[in-house]
Image (cartoon, rainbow, N blue to C red):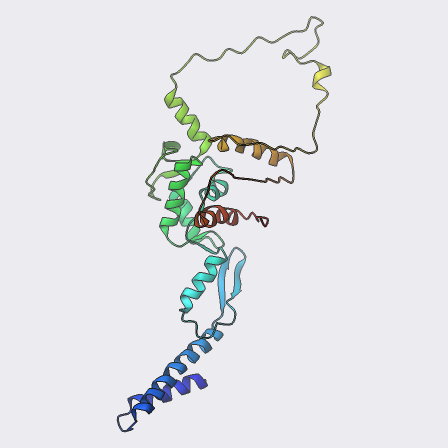
Length: 290
């Protein structure tokens, strides 16, 4: 309240034509007025420090804390910066996140539906603008994490895979599971061949077995492992090939730890923060300290 009174008083003195002020007094009034404006802005900021963020279970509150005296930053910008640093809003979205979140259990998803859900569903990923999703999808298609296509007779048809693509986020446009895109591309590239002939069942001379060559003795014993330790180098271009193996291991074991060491190359700090750390953050994976 005192900050408001002081500001109003100095404004009246500065604009009152009946008051004769010396040059020194005018400078002092301007100085006091500027100081009052800073104090008033800080007082208002102290009052408006709690931000209510829509969440799946209602709203959660974020405390912006005590403002730094003299900091010239708009309240809207301060809120934006805090939400951005906490991962509540995204300036970019990692393609790997799109794949794991939307295609891990589905063959395809409408891109328009994907974008609209982010706007209407509390707690969903909040992009800064439409271009965030379009850019993430285009990058994922180029990397071969998934494909881009459209629905024809309610069936997904892959149009772009491992290439540059233009994303519309509208109509019947869909992102498509990587395996389905590979299967469609393979059918396009290879000529039709004769159906494979299955070998005849092997019958034992003693009449035992089930017609597949397996005996009761071999079928009744399965050796298992309680732990699996693997250490290997991934050949260039083979990352996608081992993802199925990793998914299989995760389906068999409760805990799956991966140590990744990348050498003989370089990446900028900006790319590391925006594309590596951001991807893990959006996936909810905590990185251990280096």
